[in-house]
Image 1 (spheres, rainbow over the protein chains, first blue to last red):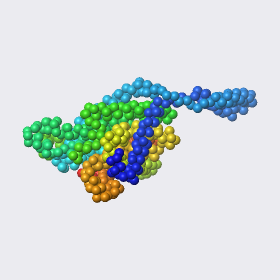
Image 2 (cartoon, rainbow over the protein chains, first blue to last red):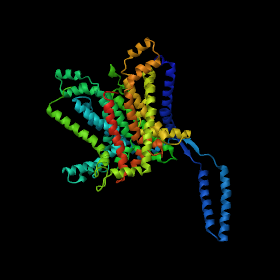
Image 3 (tube, rainbow over the protein chains, first blue to last red):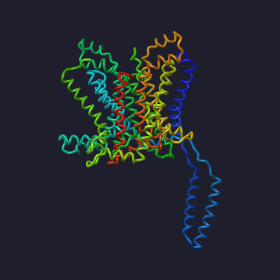
Image 4 (cartoon, chains in turn brown, purple):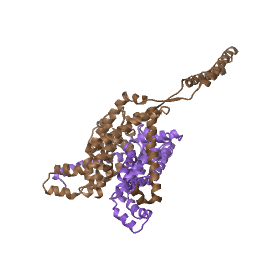
Length: 346
Length: 263
C-alpha cells in the first residue's frame, strides 16, 4: 500500500484506488452477493391475497353476466351476489398482509432432481470440449508462434478472425456450413466429391451436432493463451537440445510443453468456464439436447421466481470456481502466476 | 527455429494446419456468403440472390435495425467504460504489494472466471433490488465489468514488462507521479489500448449470454437474430448475421496491421 501511494502520489492514488474499489464492489461483489442472498430467500404470497384475487375475478364475471342479461329476476339475483362478494372482499382486505419471505434451501434441493443430471451432463460435455480443444489446438498454437513466418502469420490470422467473431455467430456459421443444404455440402456436391448432401447429416443430427459445434465455438479461447505462452519460448534452448541429440518428442515433453504450461492452464480454465455455462452456443446446435445454461436461462424467464434462477446461477458459479481451483491444483500453479505471466520480462 | 522431424512430418503438419484454417474460416465464409453469392449460404433461395433484397429487407425490419443500432451503441459504451477501469485496475494491482494485491486481483479477474450467464443475471438481480429495470444500461455494466477484467490483464502484461529503472530515474530527476504516469508508463501501455478496445467492442457487439440477461427485453442484434436464425429462409436475418462476420474480418485485419508484435 505504501509503495502504491509513493508511486502514484495521493492526488492520483486516491481516485484510482476508489475507482477500482467501487468497480470491484458494483460489478463483482454486490451482484454475486445479491444473487447468493436471493437464492436463499423464498417469497410466499399470502393465501389471503390469492383468495382476494379469486373473488375479484368472480366479481368481474358477475358484473359481465349482469350486463348481458335483461331479466329483472336474474339481475336481482346477481345484485345479491355482488353485495355478498363485496362484504367478503372488504373483510378479507382488512386481513391482507404483505407477502412473507423466509429463508430456505428449497431452490437448491429442487436442483437435485433431473436438473442435477443436466448439470452433470454439462460438466462432462465441457470437460470433453476443453480436452479436445486443447489437443486439437496445441499444434496450431505451436505453428502460430513458431516455424516459418508465412505459415505462422496465416495461422494467426485465421485464429484472429475466429476470435473476433462472437461465439454464438461462430456456432451459427458452423451450423450453416455443415447443414445438408449449406455451404460445405453444396461445394462438395459441386466438386463431385459427394453424391448427396445428406451425408453431412451426421453433424446435423441430435447430439452428434453438439460436440463439434461446442469445440468449434470455444477453440480460439483454448489456442490463444497457448500461443501467448509459446511465443516467448527461447528458440536457442530448442536448438541446443537438438544439437545435443534430443529427439523431437523429448524436446516437446522437456522444453516446449513445460513452457506452454501457463497457457495450457489458462486455456483450460477459460474454455471450461465458457463451455459449461454457455446458453446461446448449445441452443444453436441444440436438437433436443439441453445444457445447464438452458436451465439457468429458463429459470430467469419466470420473472416472479427469482429464487430458483438465483440458485441455479450460484451452482453454476460454484462449479466454475471449483473447476478453476481444480485445474490450478492439477498443474500446481497459482492463478496470478498463470494469468500474469511475469516470467516474460525476466 | 528449424522444422522438427523430416519432410513427412512437415507435410502432415502443414496438411493439418491447412485443414484447420479451412475449418476455422469456412463458417465465416458461410456467414458472409449471402452478401456476395446469390445461391449459397444460409438456406438461401436458389432462384434469387440475397444481397439486394436482404439489405432492403434489413432496412425495412425495425427489429433487426433497432437491434443493430443497440448493439453498436452497446459496443461503444463498453469500450468507453472498460478501458479506463481496466487501466486503473492494472495500475493498482501492479503497485500494491504482492500480499495486498492477491485478494483484489482475484476479485477483479473473477468476471472472466465465471460464465456470462452468471454475471448477466447477478447484475440484473442487484439492480432490480435497487429499483432499476433491465435494459441496455445494465448490459453495458455487466459486459463492461467482464471486458474491464480482460483489458486489465492486457495492460498488466505490458506493465510487468516495464523496466522499473525508468520510473526510478524519472523520480530521481524530480518528476511528479503524474508526469511519470503520462510520460513513461502510458506510452509503454498505449500499444495495448487499440487491441483492448477492438476486443471489447467486437465481443460486446456479438455477445449473447451476458448481455441478454441484463438487457431484459431491450433488443440487441444477437438476441433478435438468435430465434430467427433457426427459422430458415430469412434474407434480412442472413444479411444481419453477415455484418458481424464482416466486422470480425475487419477487426482481425486491423489487429494484424496495428497490433503486430504488440500486447
